[in-house]
Length: 471
Figure 1 (tube, rainbow, N blue to C red):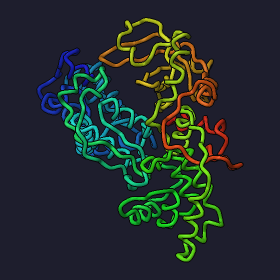
Figure 2 (tube, rainbow, N blue to C red):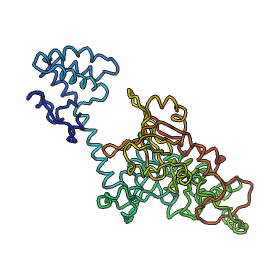
Figure 3 (cartoon, rainbow, N blue to C red):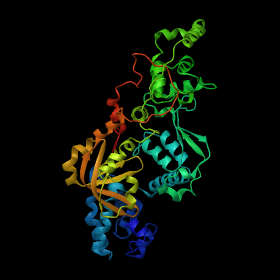
Figure 4 (cartoon, helix red, strand yellow):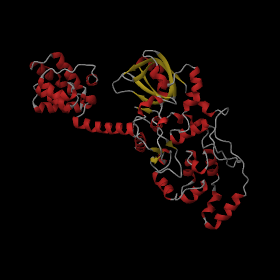
């Protein structure tokens, strides 16, 4: 009711002057616990001590369920003071609901300040907002991949983790802002956003590394590392830690892509330990100069994306769904970014990685958030449909949803009636034919060692969306 009144969709009404004094700031709708106590005293005839007991009952509703003990007392008191019984029942029902969501006004104001400040930063400085929230992870609803995507959608340049530029936290690097990078659907923000920084991802994004060890890497960096071996000799990191950096494609600044860096890490065997002794340093360097060079085949883009998700939980190179767009189009699936142009009530199919599965405590519906390469789609699944497709809803990583589009107050939902598991389609990222590659330095090749990045890639598909938040 409060939002409808705030939006002018419902008339503001006060049953009495006394209640207007209590509810004026919230347009006639009780929102805070203090208001409920005052209503109980002024309209229900409660004594202050009774009103405080009512407040305690509201605060412990989920645990004790005692607020119902005050129902008849409240309604009879309000009717006795001249209030309509229907209004009295509605008023108590709202107060009873405080056990689910109600706050004291001071708590609500504290939360509101955080929300306002967050909205302000996200609106005017999405670079600052993105870096700050990434550094506060893990913290809730959206994963780093979605935070980064939203920042890039708003024109923020996001730079990869790099041994010569990153520190533990994500940081800001001064750069000229190009409003043309803002996606068309956010075009109205081009004169609003004031960012002047790129976001540099920090080592915290790489799975399996510690802040303490990465601080040592940074402290020993000096004017910069020149090679994988240089990192190993100067930083004190063990081979496993350097391998995690290589798996995260963090050696680009020295001309090595993921595959080339992994190749050089695999060369750091036991015999190389002697290089840490000055006596053996120069001879070893001369011997390496005599080694013949051959070329490593470049790692295909799809494989890079799989490894990015495995190491970082995100990829700046491409979104997994981009590799499937042609096939999705042929299957009649609408890109999420086009949903605002779809007529309300029309039947539509969407597809994406499952980001969030949410089921409110006493709600009947299941809510999903699906992400494709450009945008997200919000899905509502009613119990009857959920029962039919439960295994897909709860277990699939990439799904297709068909249903009726609902468009209300600039919020779009798909009310699902059919759900299909498309997870197997993600295997296209690992197919060898006709895959683009990312250009980088040519490196030596010719060993029985596997430079593809640890585990067989087919075992890493689950990393693409396996971390869907379940709320």
